[in-house]
Image (cartoon, rainbow over all chains, first blue to last red):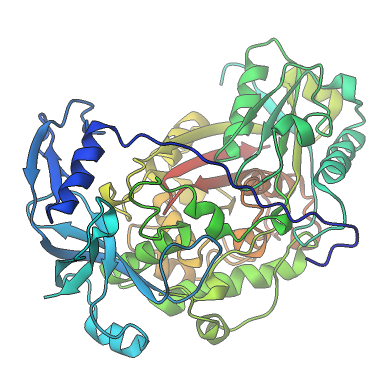
Length: 153
Length: 380
């Protein structure tokens, strides 16, 4: 910063302890066992993934648990090749919204499993509407990144 | 509306980095608006500020920096986070109660001091799921843009034309942060940081202290012979879960229809003379024009091709340069209201449009891919 007067570089780190709650604890624990859990709304019947305690539309409990498919359709994607402070994912990466088979909302994750450095290759390979499948980490911690990425089928 | 509310005066500062600290900068803009209105601090009955103390401020409690400098202490004031146009609505409601005759609305953002917008908006995600996979507002917008182009056949060139228009318009706006004469190729050949978006289709981070003085009908007539009335207002918020939404069927339609109904507007494309809309990503101006009813769904690309939204067109959109030129993230919605106000008064200087502006629309959006929208209709 080229300020005329003095500046203060102020970086703040504060610890918080955030509860996953019962629903998301069960969802993330399921990832350890290579399972993706959703819940079904008791009114509209939509299958929501990740699992939810309630359906935000109907505002009733979504308490019917089901393991959903690990394959789905790519709804949309973006190819990121830049860095910003605090970024958790190493570029280049493909952010993806995926409709897992049998579910009714987009599941957000990454698409990878091929050379991402060459954008022309990426554009050839990645198409909206294509089928993708989850690829799992060997060492799973109950974290969304227990799924390494989704690879094109 | 039951009790009418007018904007009687407004001020703002330039978007580029300034030498002031936040405190002094806020004071200068608020002092300027009071001076222009011929008022002093005690003439203000209530204050509503729009700020973001944490991610887009990083200082401390609002009171430390904004409360005294926005002339608010000892007054029944309140502050608001999120889309800053909400602050305009809240202040207007205070006047409508009949308990307050004047209100000051202050939007506060000093972007030059902040981390990148993407660092801040990355923190808007939930910490368990969406933050871990690197979602931020730009990643979300790029996904929305791809869907928009693929579903409706809107081209990258048509999206880039928004940046060409707005950065060109900004040449006439002394407050604009980023400006210049560019070609569609310049825009498309800028760094492809997050495909399909290129750098010049993404708004910068700018400074923007915005101040507006509102007044009741009786008081407004004493304060100015050119009051600008709030004719209508509407807002709507979509679900937070990004994957739950159809990114091309968002809440702007609902926000706009609420505002149009209040203002008695039935044909927005004909009845709105000028629009200042929040387009942090170039293609969003096209999509928002559809949702505002200026053109048919899916026709945003053809709409910009037609020239209607140019500064000298039938419905100028972002004659100021919009948010692509000036993006004080927190206060950008209020800045749209200031620009609409100036155009109605004929006081927009070099970027005053040629046509007569009787009714203008100001739009703000906050959240990923337009999660939240607010629309204000201002008029003579």
